[in-house]
Length: 156
Image (cartoon, rainbow, N blue to C red; front, top):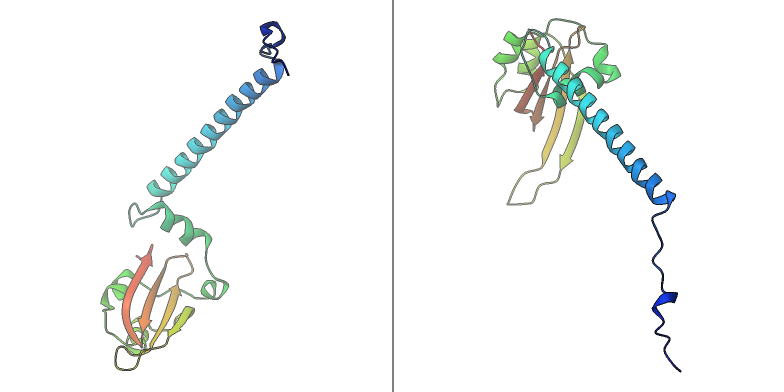
C-alpha cells in the first residue's frame, strides 16, 4: 500500500469561536473565583477584628463558636467567667470543676478506649461544655475523671 505524502491534504484548523468562548469563560471563572476569595478574606478579617473584648482570635474558633452551638448548650445560663475558668487545673475531677463553676456541664462528646493488660489501662474520655446566654463558653476534657485539657471562647 502506498503512503500518501501529499501535504496539501493535511490541514491545521484555524482558531474557531469555540476556543475563544472557552478562553473568555476561563477568564470569567477566574475573576469570579478571585472575587469570592477576596470576599472570604474580608469576612475573616472582620471576624478577627470584631470578636469582642477578649481581643483577636483565630478565624476558625470565631466561626465555629458563633455558628456551632449544640441545642443542649444553648439552654445553659450565665455565671461562667474567665476567673472561674482559670481556676480549673489539669488533674481535677469533674466534681471539683462543678464545684468551681457552680453547675453541671452538658456532655458534648465521649469515647472509650480499651486498655491493654499490663501495658495501659482503659481510657474513658468525656468533653463537657458550659455556655452563657451571650454565647461565651468553655469546654473541659476529662480522661478517667481527670482534667486533661480545657478551652474557652469569649469568657469575661
